Amino acid sequence: MELLDKIFASSSHYAWEGLLFLLIGGGLYLIFKIRFLPFRYLVHAIAILRGRYDNESDAGEISHFQALTTALSATVGMGNIAGVAVAIAIGGPGAVFWMWVSAVIGMSTKFFTATLAVLFRGKDSNGELQGGPMYFITEGLGRKWKPLAVFFSVAGLVGALPVFNVNQLTQAINDILLKPAGLYSGFNSNIVVGVALAALTAIVILGGLSRISKTASRMVPAMVILYFVLVLFILGVHIDVVPKYLALIFTDAFSASFFEGDTFLGGIVGGLIVLGIRRGAFSNEAGIGTAPMAHGAAKTNEPIREGLVAMLGPAIDTLIICTLTALAILVTGVWQSTEANGVSLTANAFMEAIPVYGKYALLLCIAVFSISSLFSYSYYGTKCMSFLFGAKYKNYYNYIYIASILMGATTSLSLMINLIDTFFAFMAIPTMTATILLAPRVVKEAKLYFAKLKKT
Image (cartoon, rainbow, N blue to C red; front, side):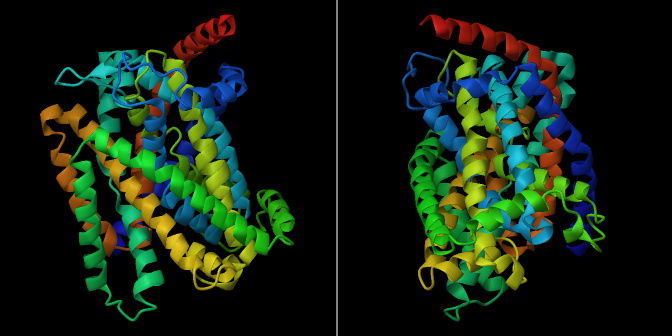
């Protein structure tokens, strides 16, 4: 396991250094290519989300709202709670600024990728409409680009595994419930938690996308609101230092002093940027290619509408929820007073500000965020399996997926995060490459759609 950890740590580090240019450079290219046009229609995006333009006769499986909540149920999870904590523990407050940069650029990227997922929907071996990077690569760029789609799908089989979420949920249950009660017994406890999560996940994911989307649409909004209220309470308790830490996020973003002597990041601001972008992408998954698979199933004949809805994802996920987590960790001071990392660091912040009950409220949010993520990621994996081997084999992935829950519950945080980081990078390469090449088609569609909208 230690050898695997070292291998994935090294591959993740080098892959993300190279990918930084593709995600940020490519994202900036997309923003300027479309001249910030989608950002002017955020109110219209919310109207679409609320169902104003829903039409049951349109192609697709689920509503705009269900598509967004399905995508958010995957992204609003441990990336927001544990991923932010990892970023601050390694890189300090400045990492949060670069997560914000990732989110703003990611809004544009999600607009393009989700639009493409509907614009170039393909058919699986059963003749059913499907969306996602593998389909907009083959349908938009042509069959000669299929190796790129295959590369994405192979990487997606691993990238969609729920091992990081399970690892951190297990850690939270151990730290918040089992250890204080004297019930923790090491590996045995982890196995019990893993089996329980595997059983719960199996009940939902074996029911298909309809059950996943309905479950996510009920669970995610309520937990986002609860988490929002809890963190606002923490910020209220420490309101005197909130301005100080907001300012520190900006000033620390361009300071290399935090990294002096750090051999991994090399003591340079560039290391901080890479860290922030990695954790931002891990949180909102813009450019990775997962969300377009959910948005590609939306009931709509207007690709731009789904692009606008998808654009709201990074704003909710990173600009709001990740920022709340970061401020809770910073204002309570736990990032400087403890060696904890990941979800344990966030739990310490809640316990400091809300004694006794804070950790249990956080555990409830963590449980819902993580479990909803487990449901959505299985859908992404089955889509990749279906593309590679045929629709009749896609459900076999669910059994691999359920088994991987046990691995996530019993292995180290370091190995799990390096594993998923590596394969997220591999997924982003074909996704961003195809999106940049197909960008002119999206711009053309957008101009036509917004011109038509002005006439109505």
